[in-house]
Structures are given as structure tokens and as C-alpha cells.
Length: 160
Length: 177
Image (spheres, rainbow over the protein chains, first blue to last red):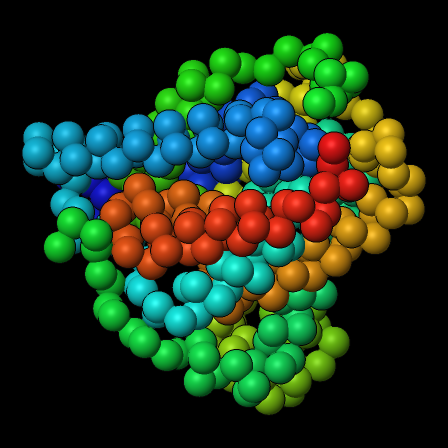
């Protein structure tokens, strides 16, 4: 049965419409959990507000268990679900650069859009930075290409 | 410790309930579309489109963007993540409106100026944008969604993001506490 779009049970355009609705749910949950506030997000790194840790890991575990049960019940074919490929070097270095951006900017990309939607000017400036950063990477890609492609481990899962 | 923390006044969802709801949204994305959530990919779509609009031949000189536009049938805006991120703006706006949190402002610690906050926000955004391309996805697309499908890379990126932010927290403490 699932996943619906890869099994062609819904059309491409329906998939895009549902993407919009899924995004609405995503934005709603982020905002109502307090992810639209950089001071609340940064709190986790100083121990005064642990909301990020609670929401983030509860979310990941909920989805993991959901996928596990759906797979056991035969509702979803996990072979058709996208698994992020592992390029060890770029996963680590990219993550380090993002971590530095997180503590300086107080947002990650998803939360910055969520915060901008309720009028946080600092989030809008952060988004401006995102565009510059993405453009900068694309523009200088030649310098990083080797690093970007290094240590490819396939679509490796931690369960294997 | 910042007990003067103004946000205590506003009411947020219980974090564990929020986490379960976030997990269900992510689960539905996997069930419906066979993929997780994301954010930085939508920024990449907009960047690719803007480069194409200004100078179509410029994209061909940028292998990183060319591959991306080709995989999206020459229209990078027609991508799952772009529609999803438009939804994020609507969902965040609706939640913020209903909770009375809609306000145009620069949020910062009372110990720093708005100007300082905005400079750091810009610098953080540049780094996050750059890192998300190098790391093939941000906190949503790589860390959260990757972990949920047990991707090794997702776990590694998650540890690198949070580990670095914790390690550097001391140097940027004046901005936050």
C-alpha cells in the first residue's frame, strides 16, 4: 500500500498538494512548540530550556516506531522510502558548519521560516543568510567537490 | 539564569505532545510521499530559479545547480519541498495568530542590541545555508528525517550539528544568556 506516491496510488499533483498540507502541519507543530523563538531554541545549549531536545527526539522516535509498525503490518514498503545516503566526510563537516550556524544564528532553516511567518525579523535576516550560503556553496562547488563526494557508504542504515 | 525570559508568558504546547505530533507529521510524509520533511532544499530551489532567471547560461557553469535543475525537469520550483515549505509558512502563521504571538520584532537577549542580534543571525544563516548543502540536508531533512528512517548519515549529521553547537556555546554565551 504505502508509500502512496512511489507506488503511484496518487498523482504527482496530488502529492504536491499533500506536501503543502504536510508542511502546514509541520509549521503548525513547530510554532506551537515554541520553535519560532531563537531564544527558546538556543536554550538547549545553555540548559535553560530543553524543548528542542524533547520535541526533536520524541518526533524522531515516534516516526521510527510508526514506520516499524506500519512495515510489520504490511502497510508500507520500506524499500520504497527514501533513505538519506551516507557520505561520511561531508556529513560530519557539513554538520559542524551547521552547528556553528545554529549557535550564532539561533535557528535552523525549518525553524527560521516558521519564525519569519509570525514576524520575527531576526529570522528573516537568517533566511537571507541561508540564500547567500546556498549560493556561496553552489558558486564555489569546484573547491568542495572532492570533499562532498568523499567516503560514500551507500544508503547505509544503522540497523544493518 | 534568565528567569526574566519574556517568552514564559506565552503558552506553548506540551513538548512531548508536540514531539508526538511532529513524529506523526513526519510519518505521514513518509507514508504518503515516501520521503521525510526538509527545509534547505526549498531554499536551494529558489536560489537555482533565481540564477536561471538572471542568466540561464550561468546554471550550466555551475555543476551543483545544473544537476539539481535537471532532476526537477528544468523547473526547480516544482518540487515537493517548495510546496511543503509554503505550508510551513501558512501553518506557522496560523498557529502564531491563534496563540497571539504575531508581532513584527527582533527577538534578542536584553543584554545585546538588535543590531548585534541581526549581524549574528545573518552570519548564522550563511553558515547554515552553506553547511546544509555540503551535508546534504539540514536539521529537518538530514538529521530528523534521516534518523527516523535509521540513516547512518542522519545520525552522524545530527551529532555533528548538536555537538558543535554545544562545543561553541561558551563562545557565544553573551548573545543568549
